[in-house]
Image 1 (cartoon, one colour):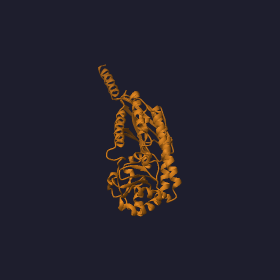
Image 2 (cartoon, rainbow, N blue to C red):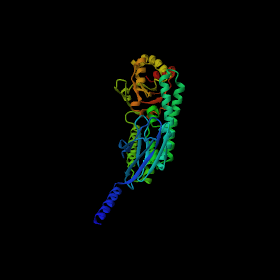
Image 3 (cartoon, rainbow, N blue to C red):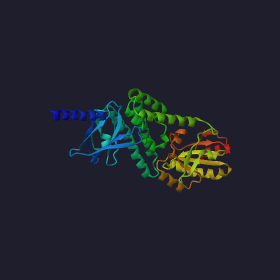
Image 4 (cartoon, rainbow, N blue to C red):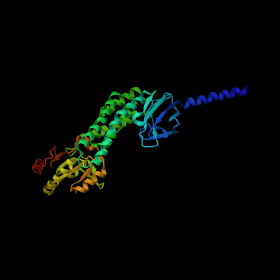
Length: 380
């Protein structure tokens, strides 16, 4: 009898210990297609800048999988993700203690997956499908542009439209779901800006981030992601204050690198007449403008005319190849090394240019060569 009592106490202690460690949580489902044979469960760090691998399983014969793990009872939801052993994007999930989440997908796993039993994870699924469908279209168009040669005006227009569609989907989603982890996840996505750096700063605004932070504070007051947003808001406010401040210049200063990684600041050319020219090596019209600018540069450079040329290309290699082939005599700089330059100067498309007078006055200007030459002569 005594032995039985001791055994019972041990069992109670075991269950008490398990309860202290958290509540049993499951994530299971089936993944059919994309040559997947393993699934990895990863926990996203509270700082959102790293992931910790928790477990890994091989898919069963019926393509099923299951993870069982403990999550602290009563804690606010955390972000976990399922990743794979090939190039498939990871699937993000918002997990609470005691969840029993089911996921099913066939074919293209990321774009076809469906979530059950998790409201927040379902919202993430909906965002992913809209946002990344547009992103994938943008990626395909970018590949076509890289292979198309000179006749790419239509492709560029389509790519820009796809990028805007993805960015608008992100803004709509965050604006409509401000008190959710799904919206926090959506606000972290920066894929569009990687393809089209000139769109940096054109999507989610400071007010979106502030509303999202307030929504999370109300719904999940102990969420660690509130601090992530607080830091980003503080950094953004500091940058806006810097961009709006006017020191000795009447225009925002920027510093970018050339193809040899040498840094050039726009303020280095203070006291000259400077053409601030945004372009892309992928656009035939920009390359034609380069050829015409060469003659202006030769005629007026010795009199104090400079060109500060900023590339909007996503491919550094393509940009370098164009600069070398065209033998550009002025600094040609890579805008994607600090894409904030495009938002600072309101660049929504290229070609686009400003002219800076000797006294630092900044004005938009035409790139029609005859008219531009008159602008230069009037300022020299």
